Structure formats: C-alpha cells, structure tokens
Image (cartoon, rainbow, N blue to C red; front, top):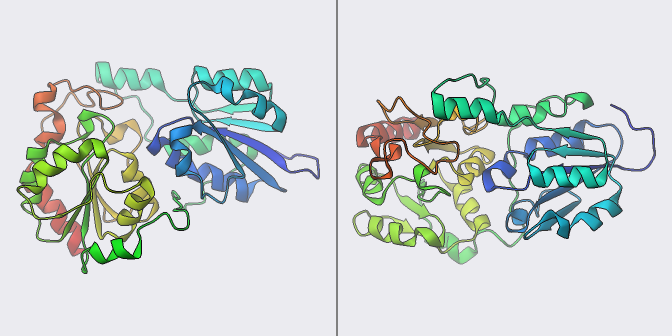
Length: 334
C-alpha cells in the first residue's frame, strides 16, 4: 500500500494493555518503520501505567496515554490527522477511538470464540500461529513481512541498574527467577518455589513487584538467594533479566522481556497454556516450557485468573521438582 504524499505517513497503533501484550507488539512497530515506503511517523495509544514500557522505543514518535477513559485523549488524537490506524486491541475503547477519528483502520482478530472453545469445552481450533505473527498479519495490506528479528525492549538511559546495584549481583552466571504474575493461576506458590529452588546449584536472583514481598520472604527464609523483590523498577528488573544466564518465569510480561533479550527461558505454565498463542516469541533455542503432567483440562482460563482444579491445587504447583531440576540442568549445560 502506497501513500502519495511528501508528508510523513502517520500511523496510530492501539494496544491499551497489558505489559506482555504491549511488548509483543514491538515487531509490528519495527515492521511499520522499516518496511513502509517513505517517512513513517508512529504514534501509540496505551494506558498510562504501561507507557514506560515504550518510552525509549526509537520506533515511536509519540505515546498517547490515558488514566481512566480514552475520551481524555480523543481531542489530541483528532488533531494528529492520522493516515492509518492499526488496532491490536479490538475492544470497546479501541472502537471508540476508530469511530471518532474516522480513519482507515486495520483490526487484529483476537479469536475470542476459539479461545472460549478451548478454555470451556476443550476444543482446540486455535491456529498454531503465535499472536505476534497474527499481529503482523493485520498489516498484510501493506505488504509487510516478518523480518525474523523477534521482540524488542529498550531501557531508557540511566533507568537500568546502577553501578552500586551491579556490585550486588553474583559475580558468576546466575539465574533470574520472576516469582510474580498478574493472576494467581500463573504464579507457583511459595512452597513450590522452595521445593524447586532447593535443587538449584547456581546463584539465584529473585525479582518481582512489591505485591510479591510476602512470598519472597517465605522463599528466602528457606533458600539462599539474592532477594530484589519489590526493590526494582520494571526497567531495572529488565536489566537483571538481560544479564541472567537463565530466566525462570511464569506466563508474564517479564517472560516476553527475557525473550526480547535473547535469554534462555524456563517458562512455567500453570492455568494458561502455550496453545493460547503467547509462548516466548523467538526465544533462545535452548529455552524450555514446563507444564504439569496429567492436567488434561487445561487451559483453565484465558488469563490465568481461575483454575479448574481449585486454587488450592492449582496447576503451576503440579510441576515437579524433578521436571524443574532437569530443565535447569539442560539449560545450563547447553
């Protein structure tokens, strides 16, 4: 698709949330910038609390963020006179933006009915295509091709680990362990982490948010590790991940950041499954996905907020210490 004008082609990309989903849109931004003819000016709409994920991304000229409703930014968006809208969220809020701007738009197919069939009836009619490739398919009218380069994550200057922080990291290859997750079905319980981490011989650095502090304290009372849970910003946590030999994480945004940095990933799959299309994208080839054996009714939910077996017996806790130990040995040996 060509645009006959000497003015920059202005493209608005919409992905309102969440952390992982926004990071998964970065190949789209790179494709728009590098493969469309002429000068491209990319704007991005997201919720304010996620804007920091993109603040240093060189593909984006401006981020439009809101706190409560998209009405907060509609006048500013109208003023921009966009040529195209790429809607990678497809919900009521993104529809409001498209309706107000009256601009040619291309909208991502979320496959919600197929996901419903998989979660509720166990009928897997999901295409065996990663969500990133489906994001890119939204741009097919532009002739955009996958460049094979994977995800991107940029840490703003001065917002990574400080020199003092670096002295506290292990002085040998270490394993970063992300103990948090937005939903309980994606998070192993503290007692499970303890069972797993007791099998690890390598240095461990725990990371997570302030909401994970109680779990971290329970873990560190029984396992020797560097505990940085609740002490780091997202960018600083990403910096830790970028320096780790192996990253252990649930189905979280930090998992996608680890993929962006090309780290070896041991991803823990509890109430969600890779069949939903959001496994680590173009991860290091030695990465391993761990799933519980015998839990045939998974995925329990689309978001990981429910477990069909009950949260007291949630799926993430059914991955055995032996599975975990073997994964660590394989990742470290390669």
